[in-house]
Amino acid sequence: MYTYQRTIHFADTDAAGVVFFPNFLAICHEAYEESLSAAGIELNTFFGAHDVLVPVAGCTAEYLRPLASGDRISVVLTPRPAGADGYAIDYEIRRLGPPEKLAARVRTEHVCISARTRERQALPAPLAAWLAHDA
Amino acid sequence: MYTYQRTIHFADTDAAGVVFFPNFLAICHEAYEESLSAAGIELNTFFGAHDVLVPVAGCTAEYLRPLASGDRISVVLTPRPAGADGYAIDYEIRRLGPPEKLAARVRTEHVCISARTRERQALPAPLAAWLAHDA
Amino acid sequence: MYTYQRTIHFADTDAAGVVFFPNFLAICHEAYEESLSAAGIELNTFFGAHDVLVPVAGCTAEYLRPLASGDRISVVLTPRPAGADGYAIDYEIRRLGPPEKLAARVRTEHVCISARTRERQALPAPLAAWLAHDA
Amino acid sequence: MYTYQRTIHFADTDAAGVVFFPNFLAICHEAYEESLSAAGIELNTFFGAHDVLVPVAGCTAEYLRPLASGDRISVVLTPRPAGADGYAIDYEIRRLGPPEKLAARVRTEHVCISARTRERQALPAPLAAWLAHDA
Image (cartoon, rainbow over all chains, first blue to last red; front, side, top):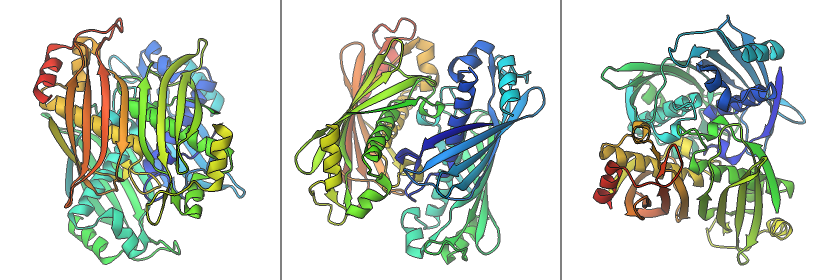
């Protein structure tokens, strides 16, 4: 489990005055990047160095409450192992209070593939360690 | 059924060189806007005029093939009625060929609520007509 | 002068592997929002409450060094009064080091107008106070 | 001179109900991509094939009128040579009418550099031809 906090920015919103629904997923990806970074994994160099990609193969989102510019939020992220070559990540996005309110639940599914052959392959050790630590 | 075509732009991509996964949902929303517009419904004024909101309550996406800047795509959109006060929309995103390839499947779920009370309410007639026509 | 720090995220980048040039402006706007928030001004409610808008009338940017996902940056923001009804804001975006490097210089120009008549009008007192404090 | 038309989408807007100012630049870049594509230059492969980058070194924007979701716009793009190794591009963004209204003027400045050494270098022939044709 890893917790990421940030503020909703104007750039996250749309003309309905609240966060545009695809942007919840971008915010979850930020939390994922921070969680990897906290485990010493830098997205920018890690995948190239290990010759792998871990693309998002699927996602689901359930939107419970709108978020507006200026709202303080927390994203609680829990990775779930899925075989030797993948994982899912569950996210709970809460608007900090008082009172604190659950705003959305998101899940992303990731599959590890070779950058060269695009065949599935086992997670590199540091990624497996991150998964074991945060799960 | 409604078909929307566009080109993948640089702004849709990320440092992995392909479309950032949340942006598939933004592209689907463009197709939805165009489909409503083709039925005479302008997002910008319609909801205010009818005092309703139809927020996205949930979505799912399955990513099958990456898309790159310059790719020509089609988005085929099929709305599905879901009671008197909601609908789902299925999207198939294809990279135009030859050969044409399915790149992603997306579903968004929409619920019609009063802009004032936020209680569920029946779809305004023009939206019900769009749904009946495109389904 | 106000300093904002954040990390470059994957969502900020494009297929060239670095931050997409319009996103530097969005990052500057985040710094501006944080600076206003630190002065007790919430974008989300302030302008409606004072019946004014302060749209961006112009901007310039000079890009000196690319930024990549994972880079830690600081944005130093300095507002500059421009008459009774406007201001400019200068931003310096630095990649934190070592060594620290200037990555971009941005300026945005803002004009205060009535939300009703769209005529220029004097800055509301809290905004004038923020300007006097941070300039 | 090259003319690009498109519709303003919900994703372009922010909580002020109109296009977020950095997104005007992203829309201009779309017009640039389309203009290059019309000249047979695909951003996705061209720069890699010629081992060059043509990053945006600077930009200016003047915002004259807000644009809202659903607005039809045209972007008229005129490239301007700037030595053997660079060019500027002027953009006029108009909201199509009637009546047609100028919404923004944008300029981007581009410098051609070697992807390997990052030294300035002359424009590849197809890019020089595009510049001569559209200027």
